[in-house]
Image (cartoon, rainbow, N blue to C red; front, top):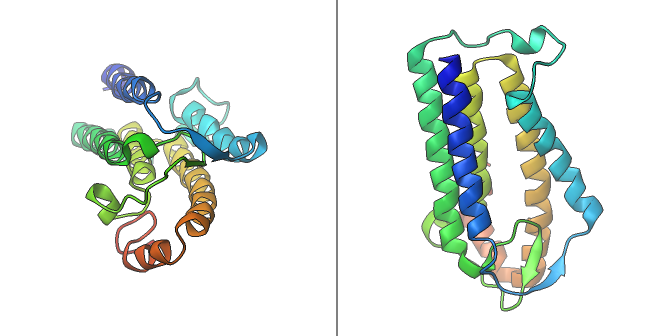
Length: 190
């Protein structure tokens, strides 16, 4: 299982990252962009989360203790959740089209997208990434996965709150109505 984990998960995540990179250039011009410091606030925990779950062994034995038994079923369940989360984020990215950006921005002729996955949550890319980390942590089964998911959640929540402020400024009452009917990150809950 460890060997498969070390091959399958990098393959899934790197394929996802390659897709993201290939499709990152066909976007609208940016008219407002967050500061470097703001970006650093949520990128730093994401980097730490990646290092925690896939990096070299951390000098704490607690982080390598298992919170889930080492079972094939759990491993494949985590793999399926990871794949599903990554595919969900790609679906959301496709719906954003040229409005997409890797940073918090306002685009020229920015549109409010409310269809497809945006009918279920306001930030489906973040939900997909969070699910993919949950799946990766499940397959890993160690406490470092729980800490990794927590860091990812906090990082995405910070970025989400900043985007929410900018979307309220840009779309006003239309965005307020959308917010009343669609959850921010977890359908029907959050």
